[in-house]
Image (tube, rainbow, N blue to C red; front, side, top):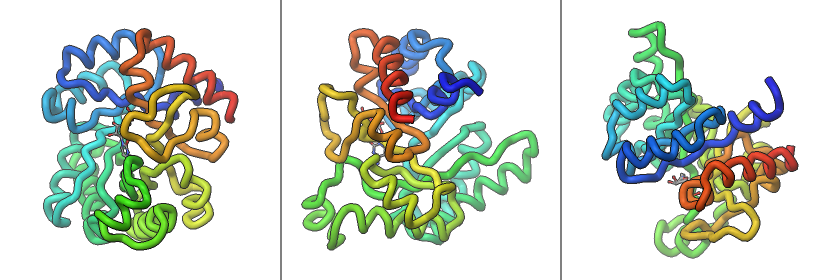
Length: 245
Ligand code: C5P
């Protein structure tokens, strides 16, 4: 695989738009670049499973970012349904606990057992949202200690549950890899090219810094979707990523 393709496979474009029409415009602008497409709750709740099938039919890898967090039996059913959609990755909240995370895996495995043409998606757990800072963690969520300690603890629980990896800030990748091993995957939002707006993110790095930290997949939304020229913005980010390889 060429470096360009390998780099693009590690970039996930967050299609955070309100309807499938706007998403199609973006996807068309980015055509030919083999990046992952991330469908989050805004688009999924509006466009539904059909839009995910459409992306899969176009050959994209899809990360369904619906952050499941419910009792184990319900998450098992949710995981079963999204696996049948053919997604390549989906996520749950680590805060749901080890049993809930194991149930997600069981639901996905059951779908593959029923339909052997399906593949097992990578199942990722959200540790702490990249918008969560120290004071939110301590005062509002009620978890004492540092954000990094809380993230590493959740990453260890995720590994214990047998999932593929975690969503975290790029600032936490090295601590996660030290605690859980190099093969344990990290998916990192909170990526901001130098000079771009932070918006509501607080624990951020640039694309090249995130690559240097050893992130496996980076999620980028507004720096691409809100750019005057999204394709140019995406290509610039890929160039920045290559500098950090
Ligand atoms: O626009 P921006 O680059 O901030 O988008 C980041 C994307 O990553 C959003 O779709 C957001 O929902 C998602 N995300 C996040 N933090 C997490 C998990 C997912 O920002 N912990």
